[in-house]
Image 1 (cartoon, rainbow, N blue to C red):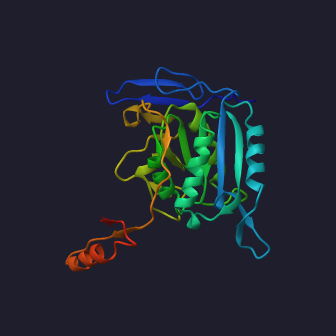
Image 2: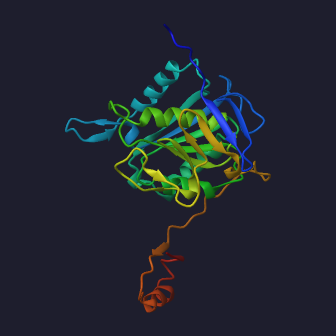
Amino acid sequence: KVSERRPAVVVETDDTGRSDVHPLGEASSGIGKLVTKESRLLILYTGGTMGMKPDTSGALAPVPGYLTQQIQDLMKLHENDPLPTVVVKEYDTLIDSCDMGPEHWKVIAEDLYAHYNDYDGFVVIMGTDTMAYSASALAFMLENIGKTVIFTGSQIPYCKTFSDARRNLLFSISLATTLDIPEVCLFFDDKLLRGCRCRKADSGSFGAFQSPNHPPLATLGLSININTSHLLPQPKGRFRVHLDMSAQVVVLKLVPQFDTAALVRLAKHGLPTCKAVVLE
Protein backbone atom coordinates (compact mmCIF):
# COMPACT_ATOMS: atom_id res chain seq x y z
CA LYS A 1 0.00 0.00 0.00
CA VAL A 2 1.39 3.36 -1.02
CA SER A 3 0.49 6.26 1.26
CA GLU A 4 -0.64 9.51 -0.26
CA ARG A 5 1.94 12.27 -0.22
CA ARG A 6 0.43 15.24 1.54
CA PRO A 7 1.95 18.72 1.37
CA ALA A 8 3.02 20.47 4.56
CA VAL A 9 0.37 22.72 6.07
CA VAL A 10 0.94 26.34 7.12
CA VAL A 11 -1.17 27.69 9.98
CA GLU A 12 -1.16 31.49 10.16
CA THR A 13 -2.59 32.92 13.37
CA ASP A 14 -2.92 36.55 14.44
CA ASP A 15 -3.36 38.08 17.88
CA THR A 16 -7.15 37.82 17.66
CA GLY A 17 -6.92 34.05 17.27
CA ARG A 18 -8.11 34.01 13.67
CA SER A 19 -6.36 31.36 11.58
CA ASP A 20 -5.66 30.87 7.90
CA VAL A 21 -4.66 27.32 6.94
CA HIS A 22 -3.16 26.52 3.54
CA PRO A 23 -0.71 24.07 1.95
CA LEU A 24 2.92 25.13 1.88
CA GLY A 25 3.80 26.60 -1.49
CA GLU A 26 0.31 27.91 -2.28
CA ALA A 27 -0.78 31.53 -2.16
CA SER A 28 -2.96 32.63 0.75
CA SER A 29 -4.75 35.74 1.90
CA GLY A 30 -1.93 36.18 4.40
CA ILE A 31 1.78 35.53 3.83
CA GLY A 32 1.63 32.36 1.73
CA LYS A 33 3.33 32.61 -1.68
CA LEU A 34 2.85 30.43 -4.74
CA VAL A 35 6.01 28.47 -5.50
CA THR A 36 6.71 26.85 -8.88
CA LYS A 37 9.85 25.80 -10.68
CA GLU A 38 9.90 29.35 -12.04
CA SER A 39 10.62 30.52 -8.49
CA ARG A 40 14.34 30.93 -7.86
CA LEU A 41 16.45 30.76 -4.71
CA LEU A 42 20.12 31.62 -4.29
CA ILE A 43 22.27 29.82 -1.71
CA LEU A 44 25.47 31.54 -0.60
CA TYR A 45 27.73 28.81 0.76
CA THR A 46 30.49 30.37 2.86
CA GLY A 47 31.73 27.29 4.75
CA GLY A 48 31.04 25.76 8.14
CA THR A 49 30.36 22.29 9.54
CA MET A 50 27.59 21.37 7.11
CA GLY A 51 29.95 20.82 4.16
CA MET A 52 32.86 19.25 6.07
CA LYS A 53 34.21 15.71 5.78
CA PRO A 54 36.95 13.88 7.70
CA ASP A 55 40.42 14.32 6.18
CA THR A 56 43.21 11.71 6.21
CA SER A 57 43.89 12.41 9.89
CA GLY A 58 40.22 12.12 10.83
CA ALA A 59 39.78 15.85 11.46
CA LEU A 60 36.83 17.62 9.87
CA ALA A 61 37.69 19.96 7.01
CA PRO A 62 35.70 21.74 4.27
CA VAL A 63 35.66 19.92 0.92
CA PRO A 64 35.15 22.27 -2.06
CA GLY A 65 32.28 21.17 -4.29
CA TYR A 66 30.97 18.48 -1.94
CA LEU A 67 28.01 20.30 -0.39
CA THR A 68 27.08 21.98 -3.66
CA GLN A 69 26.75 18.54 -5.27
CA GLN A 70 24.72 17.23 -2.31
CA ILE A 71 22.30 20.16 -2.63
CA GLN A 72 21.85 19.51 -6.35
CA ASP A 73 21.15 15.83 -5.65
CA LEU A 74 18.73 16.75 -2.86
CA MET A 75 16.75 19.02 -5.18
CA LYS A 76 16.42 16.20 -7.73
CA LEU A 77 15.12 13.93 -4.98
CA HIS A 78 12.42 16.50 -4.11
CA GLU A 79 11.63 17.69 -7.62
CA ASN A 80 7.91 17.01 -7.12
CA ASP A 81 7.70 19.01 -3.88
CA PRO A 82 6.80 22.73 -3.71
CA LEU A 83 10.40 23.91 -3.84
CA PRO A 84 12.05 26.56 -6.02
CA THR A 85 14.83 26.16 -8.53
CA VAL A 86 18.02 26.42 -6.47
CA VAL A 87 21.32 27.98 -7.52
CA VAL A 88 24.37 27.59 -5.27
CA LYS A 89 27.17 30.14 -5.15
CA GLU A 90 30.05 28.45 -3.36
CA TYR A 91 32.69 30.86 -2.17
CA ASP A 92 36.24 30.25 -3.41
CA THR A 93 37.58 29.99 0.14
CA LEU A 94 35.33 28.09 2.55
CA ILE A 95 35.97 29.40 6.05
CA ASP A 96 35.30 28.33 9.60
CA SER A 97 32.73 30.59 11.22
CA CYS A 98 35.29 31.58 13.88
CA ASP A 99 37.03 33.52 11.10
CA MET A 100 33.83 35.26 9.95
CA GLY A 101 33.84 39.03 10.49
CA PRO A 102 32.89 42.43 9.04
CA GLU A 103 34.82 41.97 5.80
CA HIS A 104 32.96 38.72 5.10
CA TRP A 105 29.63 40.33 6.03
CA LYS A 106 30.30 42.97 3.40
CA VAL A 107 30.89 40.30 0.74
CA ILE A 108 27.62 38.55 1.65
CA ALA A 109 25.72 41.86 1.61
CA GLU A 110 27.19 42.79 -1.78
CA ASP A 111 26.21 39.41 -3.24
CA LEU A 112 22.65 39.74 -1.93
CA TYR A 113 22.40 43.23 -3.40
CA ALA A 114 23.87 42.18 -6.77
CA HIS A 115 21.40 39.28 -7.14
CA TYR A 116 18.43 40.85 -5.36
CA ASN A 117 16.25 41.20 -8.45
CA ASP A 118 17.16 37.78 -9.86
CA TYR A 119 15.90 35.59 -7.02
CA ASP A 120 12.79 35.22 -4.84
CA GLY A 121 14.64 34.27 -1.66
CA PHE A 122 18.09 33.65 -0.23
CA VAL A 123 19.82 31.17 2.09
CA VAL A 124 23.26 31.68 3.64
CA ILE A 125 25.09 28.56 4.82
CA MET A 126 27.84 29.05 7.39
CA GLY A 127 29.22 27.71 10.66
CA THR A 128 27.29 28.13 13.89
CA ASP A 129 29.81 29.87 16.16
CA THR A 130 29.30 33.34 14.68
CA MET A 131 26.00 32.75 12.88
CA ALA A 132 23.95 34.85 15.29
CA TYR A 133 26.41 37.75 14.97
CA SER A 134 26.36 37.48 11.18
CA ALA A 135 22.56 37.34 10.97
CA SER A 136 22.28 40.33 13.29
CA ALA A 137 24.82 42.35 11.31
CA LEU A 138 23.11 41.63 7.97
CA ALA A 139 19.72 42.53 9.50
CA PHE A 140 20.99 46.08 9.94
CA MET A 141 23.11 46.23 6.79
CA LEU A 142 20.16 45.33 4.51
CA GLU A 143 17.81 48.28 4.88
CA ASN A 144 14.26 47.90 3.51
CA ILE A 145 14.82 44.37 2.29
CA GLY A 146 11.61 42.98 0.81
CA LYS A 147 12.63 39.33 0.52
CA THR A 148 13.55 36.55 2.93
CA VAL A 149 17.17 35.85 3.82
CA ILE A 150 17.73 32.80 6.04
CA PHE A 151 20.99 31.88 7.74
CA THR A 152 21.42 28.20 8.54
CA GLY A 153 24.03 25.51 9.15
CA SER A 154 24.32 22.31 11.13
CA GLN A 155 25.83 20.86 14.26
CA ILE A 156 26.86 17.65 12.47
CA PRO A 157 28.26 17.46 8.90
CA TYR A 158 25.96 16.49 6.03
CA CYS A 159 27.96 13.31 5.44
CA LYS A 160 27.18 11.86 8.89
CA THR A 161 24.26 9.49 9.50
CA PHE A 162 22.61 11.49 12.28
CA SER A 163 23.23 14.91 10.80
CA ASP A 164 20.79 17.77 11.20
CA ALA A 165 22.07 19.32 7.96
CA ARG A 166 19.49 17.93 5.56
CA ARG A 167 16.51 19.04 7.69
CA ASN A 168 17.86 22.55 8.28
CA LEU A 169 18.72 22.94 4.62
CA LEU A 170 15.40 21.75 3.23
CA PHE A 171 13.29 23.85 5.57
CA SER A 172 15.41 26.94 4.97
CA ILE A 173 15.08 26.55 1.20
CA SER A 174 11.34 26.04 1.50
CA LEU A 175 10.59 28.88 3.95
CA ALA A 176 12.73 31.40 2.10
CA THR A 177 10.45 31.32 -0.95
CA THR A 178 7.03 30.14 0.25
CA LEU A 179 6.36 32.77 2.93
CA ASP A 180 6.34 36.56 2.70
CA ILE A 181 8.76 37.34 5.53
CA PRO A 182 10.78 40.40 4.43
CA GLU A 183 13.77 40.25 6.77
CA VAL A 184 16.94 38.43 7.76
CA CYS A 185 16.20 35.25 9.74
CA LEU A 186 17.99 32.28 11.23
CA PHE A 187 16.59 28.76 10.94
CA PHE A 188 17.76 25.93 13.15
CA ASP A 189 16.17 22.67 14.32
CA ASP A 190 12.46 23.58 14.36
CA LYS A 191 12.42 27.37 14.71
CA LEU A 192 12.64 30.36 12.40
CA LEU A 193 14.10 33.24 14.44
CA ARG A 194 14.52 36.96 13.78
CA GLY A 195 18.15 37.45 12.81
CA CYS A 196 18.86 40.32 15.19
CA ARG A 197 17.11 38.68 18.16
CA CYS A 198 18.88 35.33 18.46
CA ARG A 199 21.97 33.89 20.05
CA LYS A 200 23.76 30.57 20.24
CA ALA A 201 22.88 29.04 23.60
CA ASP A 202 23.81 25.36 23.42
CA SER A 203 26.76 23.96 21.47
CA GLY A 204 25.75 20.38 22.27
CA SER A 205 22.17 20.44 21.01
CA PHE A 206 20.40 20.43 17.65
CA GLY A 207 18.37 23.33 19.06
CA ALA A 208 21.51 25.43 19.40
CA PHE A 209 19.90 28.85 18.98
CA GLN A 210 17.42 30.76 21.13
CA SER A 211 15.59 34.06 20.93
CA PRO A 212 15.12 34.98 24.61
CA ASN A 213 13.46 38.36 24.12
CA HIS A 214 11.31 37.72 21.07
CA PRO A 215 9.14 34.72 20.13
CA PRO A 216 10.05 32.62 17.07
CA LEU A 217 8.66 33.84 13.76
CA ALA A 218 7.66 30.26 12.95
CA THR A 219 7.79 26.88 14.66
CA LEU A 220 7.74 23.56 12.82
CA GLY A 221 5.98 20.41 13.91
CA LEU A 222 3.29 18.47 12.08
CA SER A 223 2.43 21.88 10.62
CA ILE A 224 4.27 25.18 10.17
CA ASN A 225 2.85 27.55 12.78
CA ILE A 226 3.21 31.30 12.33
CA ASN A 227 1.94 34.16 14.44
CA THR A 228 1.64 36.85 11.78
CA SER A 229 1.55 39.65 14.35
CA HIS A 230 5.27 39.02 14.99
CA LEU A 231 6.23 39.58 11.35
CA LEU A 232 7.51 42.80 9.81
CA PRO A 233 5.43 44.44 7.08
CA GLN A 234 6.74 44.88 3.57
CA PRO A 235 9.07 47.93 3.52
CA LYS A 236 7.98 51.09 1.76
CA GLY A 237 11.43 52.48 1.06
CA ARG A 238 14.04 51.51 -1.52
CA PHE A 239 16.28 48.56 -0.73
CA ARG A 240 19.73 49.76 0.33
CA VAL A 241 22.89 48.12 1.61
CA HIS A 242 25.13 49.70 4.26
CA LEU A 243 28.78 48.63 4.00
CA ASP A 244 30.52 51.27 6.12
CA MET A 245 31.29 49.57 9.43
CA SER A 246 33.88 49.87 12.16
CA ALA A 247 35.23 47.09 14.37
CA GLN A 248 36.74 49.58 16.82
CA VAL A 249 34.16 48.83 19.50
CA VAL A 250 34.71 47.71 23.09
CA VAL A 251 32.06 45.74 25.01
CA LEU A 252 32.21 45.99 28.81
CA LYS A 253 30.17 43.89 31.18
CA LEU A 254 29.26 45.85 34.30
CA VAL A 255 29.45 44.07 37.65
CA PRO A 256 28.89 45.32 41.23
CA GLN A 257 31.61 47.74 42.39
CA PHE A 258 32.73 48.31 38.81
CA ASP A 259 35.67 50.74 38.69
CA THR A 260 34.18 53.66 36.80
CA ALA A 261 37.60 55.33 36.72
CA ALA A 262 38.73 52.64 34.29
CA LEU A 263 35.85 53.51 32.00
CA VAL A 264 36.78 57.19 32.16
CA ARG A 265 40.40 56.37 31.28
CA LEU A 266 39.23 54.30 28.33
CA ALA A 267 37.03 57.13 27.08
CA LYS A 268 39.82 59.67 27.50
CA HIS A 269 42.83 57.79 26.16
CA GLY A 270 41.37 55.12 23.90
CA LEU A 271 39.88 57.44 21.28
CA PRO A 272 42.34 56.64 18.43
CA THR A 273 41.54 52.92 18.57
CA CYS A 274 38.09 52.88 20.21
CA LYS A 275 35.14 54.63 18.58
CA ALA A 276 32.36 53.21 20.77
CA VAL A 277 31.82 51.53 24.13
CA VAL A 278 28.89 49.17 24.74
CA LEU A 279 27.91 48.66 28.39
CA GLU A 280 26.18 45.45 29.44
